[in-house]
Image (cartoon, rainbow, N blue to C red; front, side, top):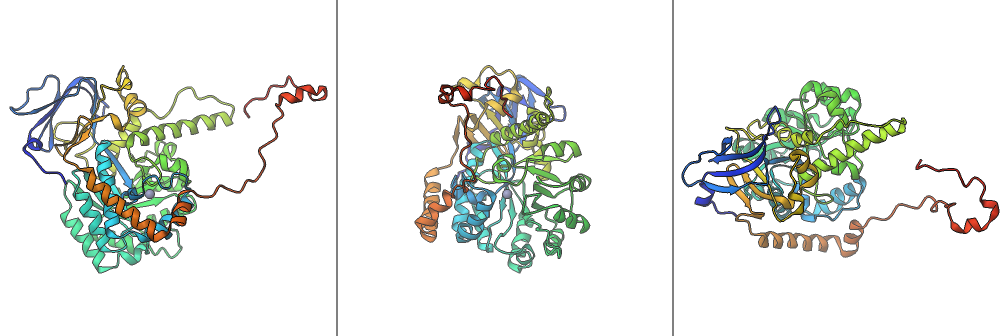
Length: 491
Ligand SMILES: [Zn+2]
């Protein structure tokens, strides 16, 4: 899909940008160059001398930052982008797990994955964990893998199958040998995890799947603390089995007790906060307060484009907004006022860069420092009135910038987007592949059910719209004027 060229092999220097290194000290460097040679960051500094033939990219007026990392995205679902905009989690479960999801063929998984992978690059997301939990067969797995490999980004294939119990599919010799192959072929560009949830069944059938993961030496990623689906019981079972490791990712972890957060903190795993998802689906509130309180490593994720956006600008914005809303609301209920916010732009930027790197066990990613892998994003859009003044670069990325402002993206030293356009990627065949999938799914599901899935019924109205006493007509009636001077506050 994208031909390597001599252009791709040249060193690249981004000149004169505001560089967010995301190093331990959170260093921000104005008017600074970043030099990329081969797959590494060779130097960060002012007026750098560069090798002959280095490609120059003008970063003046822009922000240079590490590539963003999404630690949980169901990429196959991008094939039905935006379909579930008005869903709850319950509707998602029904339509995806019981209806549409079942129909997905290997080529449909590939179509969704390829589009999502390209979307990641376009939005400056250089590494994406594909939480691929609709792999009914190994052929589906092969299709998912091939699609990811056809796009020049970094990915982690988190293998899963919602159509069977994890103790069943991990015991399948074909799945096992596929996982072994993935593990043995694992490289800088493609990692592997095992993806399944722990339901809290007292018999803990998932134990067998954890044992397979342990035997294969593969990390587990699991939706934990999801209201109505996974709970503290699962965390206790994992803990008692010795399955909570520093490599484990707990997705959402929204509705857990103090005890569970402490178990996660003590065993060193990471929480993947998917705030845009949690705000709307009903897993529970994004656990940003808890991760700060218990010192749990955090990364951010987008979950699925069947509902939400697939870019980390939205993730960072949603996360700050949700945490601040909760902080204010909690105070207001006590009659108090928050005067200093606890969660800052810098933290959510850390979570979406070095936090993501920590979650997937990649200390060579997530910061802009010499020797690190060259995954670099230039946020710059001279045509946009939002591009200046650039006073607070951290706040600018989080609240002012958006995916359309992603000017240049470098993955593993290779320029995959430049001047706002993807390099060497033709969307026409990708669009056709998606159209084929949509046509097939619609035919399988039927027009009526297709529409019903997209536009769920409104809830039964429990009450009429409340009577409103503030009608001007009331003032024609002398008897209704009493008490009119009472002031009614919002609550
Ligand atoms: Zn998810």
